[in-house]
Amino acid sequence: MKSYFEPSELIINSDGSVFHLHLKPEQLADKVILVGDPGRVPMVASFFDEKECDVQSREFRTITGRFQNKRITVVSTGIGCDNIDIVLNELDALANIDFETRTVKPQLRQLELVRIGTCGGLQPNTPEGTFVASVKSIGFDGLLNFYAGRDEACDLAMEKAFVQHMGWKGAQCIAHPYIIDADKELIERVASEDMVRGVTIACGGFFGPQGRELRIPLADSNQNEKIMHFEYDGLRITNFEMESSALAGLARLMGHKAMTCCMVIANRLAGRANPNYKNSIELLIERVLERI
Ligand code: R1P
Ligand code: URA
Image 1 (cartoon, protein in one colour):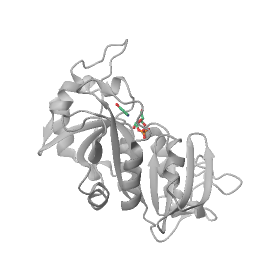
Image 2 (cartoon, protein in one colour):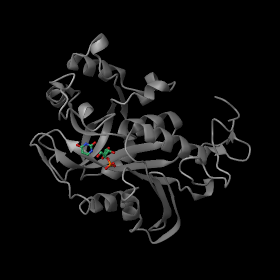
Image 3 (cartoon, protein in one colour):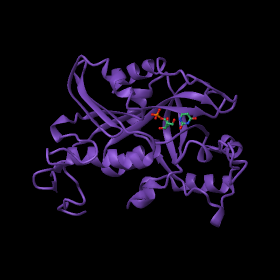
Image 4 (cartoon, helix red, strand yellow):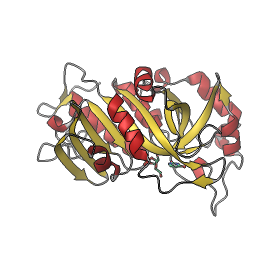
């Protein structure tokens, strides 16, 4: 690992905040809730007893405050694993790099990261409104493949079985999936008894990568059919979203605890969707705030 991070590698704004998030080190709590939609940030913070900061930059809105004596930061990531690369690296820098000396702090500060999102359900036990906690994430996004330690962190046997099941060989291997576990203790505590334990595919897109075909045909016309029938070690793939793999993967490599839980808003089996989900996600938010 490098011992000093040049200004081009870790960009710090003139007010001492980190480049994209515009957050300063002292504004970050150890417990962090990540949401995709910036509009979900004030929704989470509406449960806080007090707020200490509210910072907005691009799609990244951050509020830090207190919920029942717990200091919590809620931050929006926008859509996609590319944004998770920015948010996770900047949160980790805020926690573990000294901004004065631009060197790694001697003691790891471990963050607890819980993503609250929305997703598409793929199985009979994941209709609209279901809360799914991702025990494993399958990354169709490729992000973790750029980091050393990826093979040690991932479930290589399941990756092999999945690619074989999909029949994706050579040039037809349209995704090079990486499969990564969420933090087990966090899953037990936050998912508790009332969330479905699932395997989530995090896609680099909402349409083609999730098997949605509008005017352009898919490269693999049986993609979702095969995904729904994949079984490994008693596990089935339950849902599609777009961030859980990069979150679980980067957190693992950085030494943080992370998990994703999502509310199903699109039932891909039945062909139904609930676009008016915004009020019903409050129950999921309350459960995470109680348990984080
Ligand atoms: C797509 O509509 C977005 O919704 C899901 C997906 O992961 C993607 O970000 O999560 P959020 O509701 O948290 O954004
Ligand atoms: N988010 C996704 O990524 N997919 C869905 O189907 C619904 C929400």
